[in-house]
Amino acid sequence: MAVSISLVLLLLVLAVIFLRSGGLKVSHALVCVLLGFYLASTSVAPTIQNGLSATAQMVGNIKP
Image (cartoon, rainbow, N blue to C red; front, side):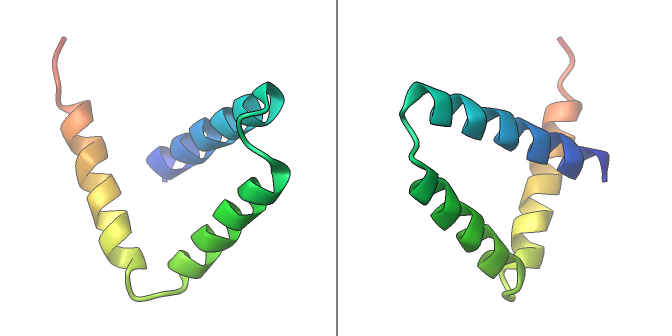
């Protein structure tokens, strides 16, 4: 749960930065959001979730 909240906050910050710099238009952001909602309701969602969880664990296990 903490990883998904952190990921959402990171994506939100990046989207705001892109919107302010002019690199991302509001219409493009809306399309990305809709794509995310549609992906979440498909059978691919568990695979994406497992991949993100495995990546987060791998990054979390790296010792500096």
